[in-house]
Length: 261
Image 1 (cartoon, rainbow, N blue to C red):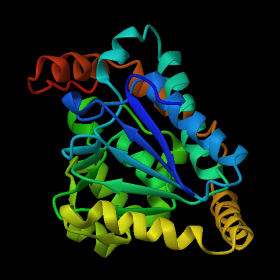
Image 2: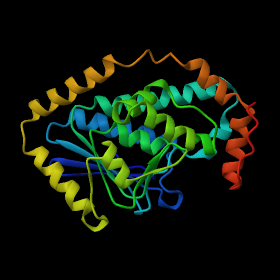
Image 3: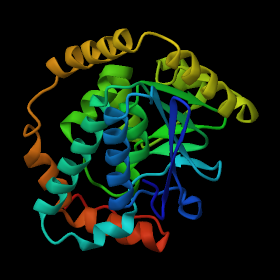
């Protein structure tokens, strides 16, 4: 189950998936996204596992997003649509896993990392943690309608717009106030606190937990639009000169020069 950039472990009723690219703040490769799906499949097929904890290696980031270098492979707007569709499949699988999921967040959870955290059932972070989707400052691309919906469920439309319009990151105190995280815990206590929550969940009635999780998911899903909605806007962004500029400027570590084209 472990890969070159992920570590999957099972200790008693608790499984842990660690995103393990600390040198690039755990930026996600396609194989790392697949490892997340594989972990969900293992949970659903293994009765003895009661919870899944997701965390990032190194202490500096949960996940900083998708590895931007992979976007250089894109040749058409369809590649952007396919990428967002693939992310939707990963997040939907994470939401649909029948066991509770906990994001153990140290440092930044940004871009795709923020999306992964939002798709988990529970989120615990340190005072130094930051959350956001700074694509308006970095890449000039566009989230899928499903990922917008997850943000809207948690923090509401005005906060979603402010977060993405400004590209700023929300600190841990604000995230707790908005309900984005369940609790802020000092870094040296975070792992133990998450284990205690996971162990408490593992001791409780699994069918009650499964039913509550699925009922909540169905209520939220009933409010979400068709995944195809907004596709033309995703194509617009991914086909733009600004997106190409965003990739190159990010990799060159210089400010992007936006043209709106």
